[in-house]
Structure formats: structure tokens, C-alpha cells
Length: 112
Image (cartoon, rainbow, N blue to C red; front, side, top):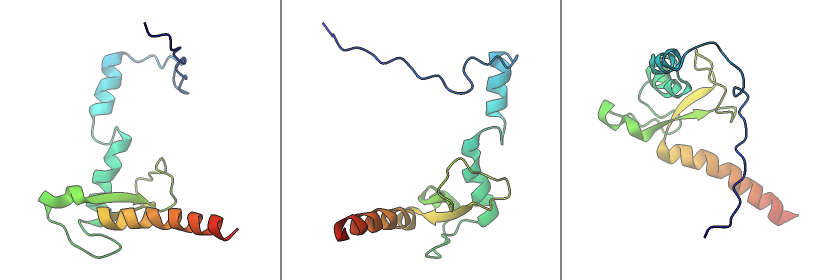
């Protein structure tokens, strides 16, 4: 018998607020192009092209999965429609970009 206690789910800011919309209306809105925050990737690829902003490697349409969107300010929720906070980076350059911060933090701790 499992005796572990389950933690109660946290309420999101939207929970408990009745928007007055039916479930069907909400689903329809989420399925519309531009209705989801995930679509910022497609928008960034259209704005900036299929090229890595760091190494300059160009990608074919079939290989675009290797391009990722990097948020310049580090806030993945900051998605302006003009793409001012985005740059397309290949998976290798994106990994390098984020590992630099980790390496810097590690070296700072080591010196102190």
C-alpha cells in the first residue's frame, strides 16, 4: 500500500477566474495561428531566417529543427511580436551560450 502523501496542486493565476468562455471557445483560440506562445519560434524563423546568428550556418527547411530561439534577456515569457528579444541559434551555439553562464558561475564560486 502506498502511504506517500500527495501535495495539493498549486493554483495558477488563471484558475478560479471565470472568463465566461466555453471550453470549445478556448480550444478554438489556442488552435488559431498566433494564439499560442509556442508560435514565437515559427515567427522568429520567419523574421530572422534559417540562419544561426552566432556561427552563421545556414539551414534548409528540412533541417530547421536544428535551429532554436534564444531569448536575449533570458526571459522565455518575453515574446514581443517584432522579435526584438529573439535570435535564432543552432542547437550547438544555443548550448554554448547557456553553458557560458554556468561556467562563469562555477569559476566565481571556485575563486571565493
